[in-house]
Image (cartoon, rainbow, N blue to C red):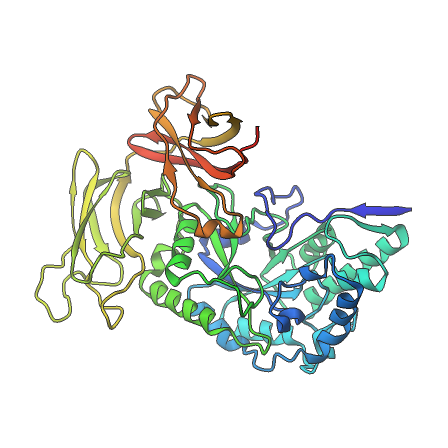
Length: 537
């Protein structure tokens, strides 16, 4: 009898936000730890990194010659002798990461540890040593959480059993399927018994259940992310999410080291991703891929150091924080502690010169008799070489809280620190206790444009005054971080049942757009999740 299963989750494929599983034994204290964690470092590293190509996926649809040489020749030349997990862990900690997730085995089946299940592993290469134990010991020594990435998919196993390598239509007879499950179980037992306490597990691919059961049995305190909670990939959610979640996002466009044809995000972009993730109630798992010799590429190290400089100044704004009543007001993003301390991230700082005073109006905040305002990292009393007034001020107005601050700390030699400035507001109160829940609903293409729809859940008339949509061309999952600015539609009314829709003539037939519904509540814009408009009638 032939059994067939479909593998649905993979790097660089669209990963939906329905990762939560009914079978979830994550302990509440471990979930709370994740909520308090601003970000972690993801490391993708495999035997095919020598070629500078996508990790594992090139095996799907490859010729027999390619596949045979992949499994027989690549291990003979893989020698990451410059891999220094201690240096990587120290850098990750400086950048604010609280844990590292390392690829123990990707879909190719190449194992980074001294496994007894297959010869397709790191000890059968010129490196010869168990690289995983080196990573585990160094990460633990630096004080970071130890995380494993593990793929239950194994293209090497398929190849050894003369099964075509596929992601969507893997067929095995009952006997082979039993061998496959036993193979996976033996690998999991090695990983979860031979390396001490493992803090985090990221399961990529199917079937996940064997891995989950063994992980929680052998490591009861382990936190399983993908496989148990929401883990959107290469994107951030369009709205706040109350359930725990993290987004795994590459520093460039590739998961594994890609020496050419890759585009790295700037340090500023990476910081803005971190800020947005925290503002929406989640965290960031930022991916790097070492060079084949084990070193981080200079571009990766440089960006982590830029993040380290920003984190050293602003750590309290992203560690152990929660969402505010709204995630942002235009380019100003928010996190909160205890509901009475607010951190406002000023992300548009390209024209803000050192020593210059700027004033911001924050609509979601009102002051109290004890309100205090300051800029993180500076004392707001002294600026180098000048006697200017650099104090931080605020004034309550009918429109909102007016905050006036000076960028008064020298971070770069050229006085042009380009990264977000964080304003801390203590002893404040929210203008609204809770934002309405906005749902981005379905869309419909027409001959003259498209109809976009939204809904406010449990709508109470006048709780939200009006609604609109934001849209922009959809350039693909990986490319969405490089997309053009959002375009705002006109406002539309909200029906008594909470529904609203709008005809947008700018949506062209045959083109794809991403869009999100937005409702106005007490002069604040509350966003719904992002959806894709396909432009097909």
